[in-house]
Image (cartoon, rainbow, N blue to C red):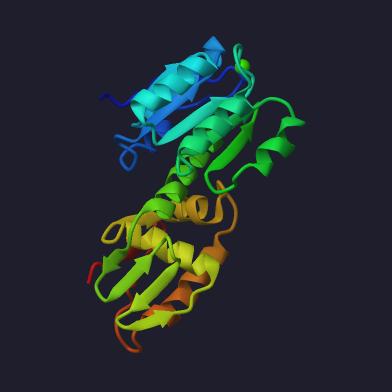
Length: 253
Ligand code: CA
């Protein structure tokens, strides 16, 4: 698929240059996203952005069509508008979540009063973005949500003598169980998921701290240092290599 370089204009007045969107490709190829949105302009803009980001995306304009498509397509994530013409988006969300609790859902809400209800739903698999939203933020949320659901459902990750079990949230080094703080665990899981590859600071901030981070990332370095003290042998090379100005890489050996 060609990388789209045209500027994408969101109905809500935001523009984002093509290359910025294209930079989300690579890691996401093949993940399936179902978009359920009745607004033509928002729908077509989002569809283009999703395809341009490397996702396999499909767009339906009603709740019924959305549920049918979800049953056929088995998407990895559903981007769901709450204000649909035929059914309440929240009901669609509940039914989809009831059928598959590990399905990632990101809801698009226009009204503040809906937020309480949305937040009351399973926070692990369901996230929301309020309109008007920034396209970059929405794409970051989608990625974070896909990662989180992946981490929930994947089985053990083994690199060298370290075994990480996302479901049980346990880490073993050889026979010894390590005691990690929650963010240290999330950080290790994220780095090990891409072992041998660079993971950028921005990706780590987004996926581990759930933020599209433009400010200080000192907290990231702090947690990497803490993690190194727990997983590295004294005097040996670190399992986590610092890539100056880029991020970190978890070494395969
Ligand atoms: Ca709508």
